[in-house]
Image 1 (cartoon, rainbow, N blue to C red):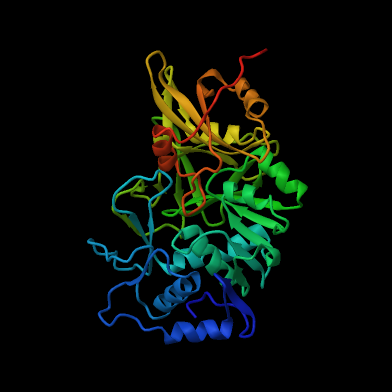
Image 2 (image 1 turned 60 degrees about the vertical axis):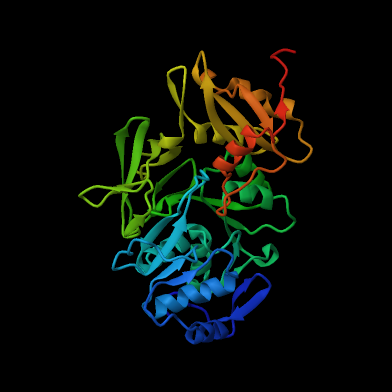
Length: 407
């Protein structure tokens, strides 16, 4: 059915939100679903039960009807004619206004399923832990990937062998008793501290870089990442560094409502993320890259361009720091300075946890620190930068006063 359902009839396909369907029941539900008679896109609003959302997506794909996930309103602009699946996305900035709609073919997702299974070691019949709602592309893809493997998409950690998660979600998951053996991590780079915690629990990390507009671009399980199978990558000069461009069969058709997607005449595309090569000892290996973050999250401190996401990555490597958001604010002397809001592990003392931040380069050091009991997350599981900025401006987060060096 649309190439996604790969399990035997009596195997559990979905165990989500307190509901369970085997493959036979899932197939029947897809066939029985009534679609609008006017030929318009099938809408799957935010808040739809995950089982119903997956049934709707599969029904649309099976019957050649575009499926629009994440809204109950039809777009003002027409979708590209080849659109089979469209997903709304607003990113982690929390910007107000209409969401962007990423339009793609089903084949652009289906083509990446087998390479991801090989790269992650996910076996046929695997139970895949889903860590967020179906209107987020990362989670919907993870559920469909489980079905393509003939496995089970589940929200119960105790039964899962694979989990798809952001580093922040994985850090919280590692506090639990049951942890899947393999974690497929995206949304940001896992720091050394998270890698160490995962290793202690016997969890293998497989990191990938992608975007809703680009799908998979890079993948790896150690220092740096190489091109995902089927992807060509280039680094091109930009104002804040070197932009990562990709060409592959996984790219979206278009984005409605604005956004960062840019294309060139040769079929390469970018969303403005910056990257740099990673030194490697063996020249026979595929080139490896490290993604630094979005160029539009750059802060200029004393004339030096600092990427907020790069500093956040360094902060979460500090013992006791579970998550961090770094923002820029005006400074009369420096032009801009960094402010950090951190979420600490339970029982962690902020002073020793953050003392090592003094070893960061001068421009990278936050000049003001605040503490959040739990940072707000986007639906995809990344810290919500816009919501943190709003809360910080409202005085929600208490300040952390660190002692001077040597005090």
